[in-house]
Length: 141
Image (cartoon, rainbow, N blue to C red):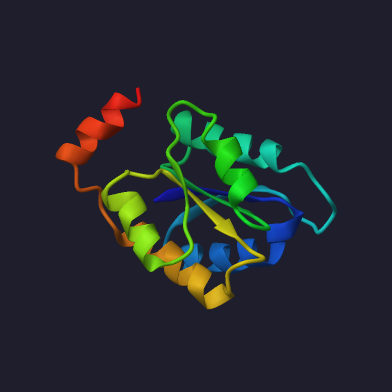
């Protein structure tokens, strides 16, 4: 799977860990930045990841900032994006199974690396259940 990956300055270290996990699992990573600890504006990176997903360049996206909140808000401004801020394996699984989330948001300052990587792994492995959940997604446009 091709996965767009982006972060702001608060997510640099976690982004590299996620990138390593994705590549080891055989995924293609479309790394859109940021690439340093220098302060940047997270909406720019949310837009890059979301555009990659909506334009079909990447099948899914992962965004990382300090808390994940800003990235989630910025990503969900895009009409075809269903971004989910997840804090554990349960929310990760439900974001895919019930909401068909195509962008995962993570908070590097609130998650330990092992928890974050578990969230990513579960999110990648979980399929959308469809059925009544598809009807609800369609209600959002």
